[in-house]
Length: 247
Length: 247
Image 1 (cartoon, chains in turn orange, green):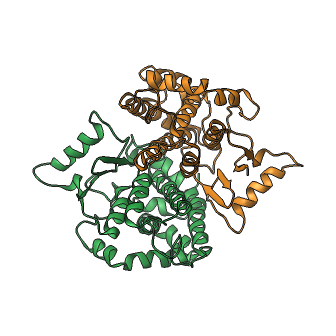
Image 2 (cartoon, helix red, strand yellow):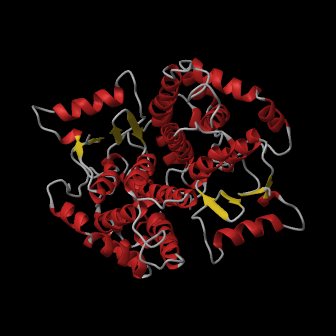
Image 3 (tube, chains in turn cyan, blue):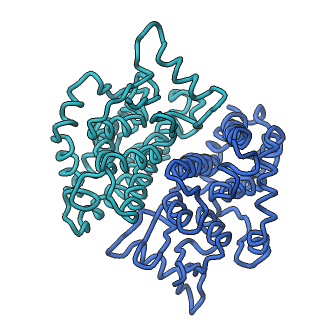
């Protein structure tokens, strides 16, 4: 039975971490929110799942796997990874994959909060001044620190620097690929600067991009475009050299 | 061999989620950062682990379990929970515990970001105006929404509303206890208001507090006090009725 991915229809968003894993696994899935059997029908189903009586998850994405309904990106990936060989087979490796994914989740949240420092209840335009104040810390400190960490993880992998864990692709590799995609879109200047010192991260990104199923997915209409409604957004003023925007 | 918990010495912080699990499990552990064999010796060891050549984790807390070194709270709890009977024994239950923990982690981050909306690189006093703008959304929307979610999880537990998962305590129960502790400390007005509608969450908090090992821990010097250097901080101006502070 095909998996059901329940997520917002118009953006890559955090659902993209799940899509990449499903695509790499070659798994059959329905992206429920994007189904078009009548007006908004897909999203009605998504909201019914999320806000219905069972209320299985606090937020999207949610994966339905037969009887099992799972929320939270890292929990979904841990579940899918074990089923499709996208985690190391041993318990310690599985824990390590989860740890790496959670660190990528932290980077995702920080990347989002650059443009929404005052919370999701206000539009960007209502918090632009605060965003201008938050951006330099992300670009100068946090982003380079995160990328340097993953560079080090690759560098110290006993099986070589091709993947984050062992000698085979695991789901955090797919997520790190997505982060590089987002960072280059949203913060082209800061990302270029930070990635200059992390050749192994750049090479991993390129390696994932060339995988046949991922390459086919990226060319397909299933891959949604980047946008300013996504988790990572390109507002040029937030990618400026820090000294011009620090308060 | 005793576990080593590597964390900042002066605060409960995210390390507290790990301490509560270790205490409930009755597991032997060394809180390395708080060891006092000479000046700052414990914290020197912690930083050597975190910033040394192996650099196993991006941030604290880190748990050392023999050869295995684990970072990220939810990954540590998933590991400890499986070893000490603090997760459901089946795979689906283990995934569900992880999902609940990650939702508690999101609440933790949002609670922190109320006082640090512009990032960790600035002091509270430097971002107080932004914090005053962020606080109402947390109190009026996010906090009630999170607590209502956990209330619903308790309400719909087929085994009854005593615990989040099944008929026995699991690690997310301990973490929800800690969140209630923090919320009551940091946002006494908003927490009282939100908890009024979530009697099962209140009862779970009281139930965890009465568990013999947790009760003993809370009375011991191992339990650090709340403070304004912690993840949740009590700044009275951030707990004011929303209409007075919204921009």
